[in-house]
Length: 312
Ligand code: SAM
Ligand code: DTB
Ligand code: SF4
Image 1 (cartoon, rainbow, N blue to C red):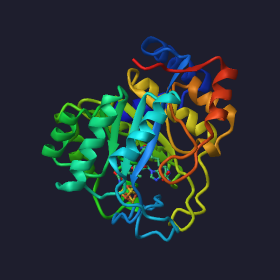
Image 2 (cartoon, rainbow, N blue to C red):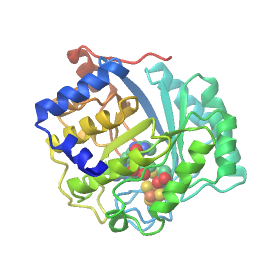
Image 3 (spheres, rainbow, N blue to C red):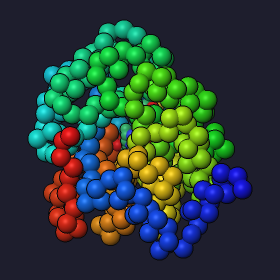
Image 4 (tube, rainbow, N blue to C red):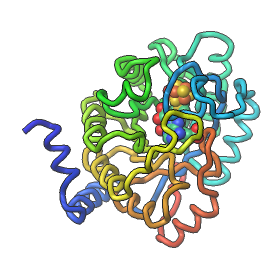
């Protein structure tokens, strides 16, 4: 049997069996009562030259977004302190860049990384493509993890992005792991892809060496003015199945229920936690779109007898 058949066999099990297996592995590696809270900050917003069909920040999409140049170090550190005070243990900075360019802007990001690391928060960046020497500098500045998503399967990818290749992404991920930085790599569901595309993405992730320690599962957040406008949302049980399958394939990883929670019911999010998701973005904004209010998340976790993971 090929590995892909095995992944499909996991995914298509009767849901009770799939959830039982996911929970068994989840409990072996994690405390099932805890979720990690992460805060996102958009440090450079909009005017991105890439043509990602899902994104509010691409110059190719008429989304009405107000662009913002690189934020000051002090502003970001104020946000990071507030994130820590509100219970986040990971702070993720995102820039609408195709790639990192050496120079003053990169130096400013390195200062941000140093400043956030000094607050004893996990520090994550997502800045587009990276070269090995840039990954090494981020590592030296104290970066914990670098987020660079493969987004979808190799086959569906060209329907979504044409300005950089799957191979480009794999090379950035290589540079990140070679520098000793933890890889955060996942994808987006709900872009019109098939279940097979989602399983193919999981297969590529499984083939990474080392496998990612952090797997964000985003549901596409609808953005008017993008080519994906009008795409139907992910079928809820399919989302739960993907999370459980990711938990089984990557038992030690953080499986993050990332973008798209505002569009989910409390019950669906609960099922995702039971399937092995153990991290959420906290606070009312993602990068450019809305996320549930903190109070709603606190209330939900409280009702479930779950709690935010303390700083380690
Ligand atoms: N520009 C950098 C890059 O793409 O590598 C970093 C920022 S980019 C916004 C980070 C990730 O956010 C993308 O790879 C994509 O997976 C996710 N993303 C962007 N827009 C989204 C949306 N509308 N819904 C869900 N996920 C989205
Ligand atoms: C990831 O996988 N999800 C986050 C983070 N990595 C950078 C981004 C979600 C962005 C959602 C759309 C927006 O707010 O612009
Ligand atoms: Fe640019 Fe990243 Fe948005 Fe693609 S996902 S358009 S690279 S900001």
